[in-house]
Length: 84
Image (cartoon, helix red, strand yellow):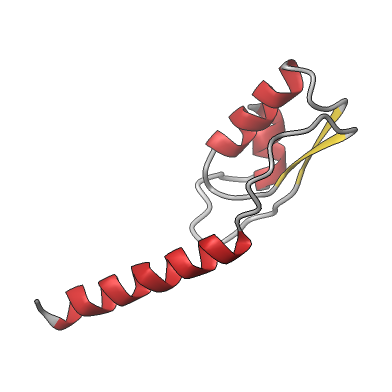
């Protein structure tokens, strides 16, 4: 095993610890608002739209401006998600 593999394995182990700590295991509940946090992953917008269509919220609020390596040109993440 080379040094990079050891670091990757350690990082992955630490990520699992953090995930296990933060994971609540709660199901989805209906709410007034669906919050979509900005990112470069358009799956966030698609999942929010799916939840909205399924009646899990009356409104969708997207956040996000132009983060590092944002794939959206001349618009914020929130605006791009709104269009999706």
